[in-house]
Amino acid sequence: MPKYVIEREIPGAGKLTGEQLKGISQTSCGVLSKMGSQIQWLQSYVTGDKIYCVYIAPNEDMVREHAKQGGFPANSVSEVVAIIDPTTAE
Image 1 (cartoon, rainbow, N blue to C red):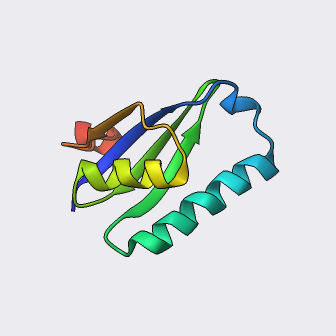
Image 2: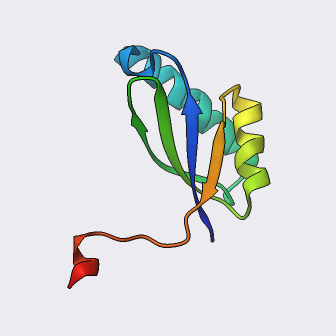
């Protein structure tokens, strides 16, 4: 199943409280539950003004539908074509 990285532009994202991040996560999980098991949220990285999310889904349309239903921006959705890490150098 393809993996996607979603860039979400959210001004002040890095200043969101733990409670606010919990609420966003709960909203996301609720939408995922309704959408079924074909789409899965792996993790997200919160930076100053953006959140980068990693999802597994059959296609980009499903990722964008999740964003639409959850009220989240999806400024960029990119399919991961390869994963590298320090062991790749060995």
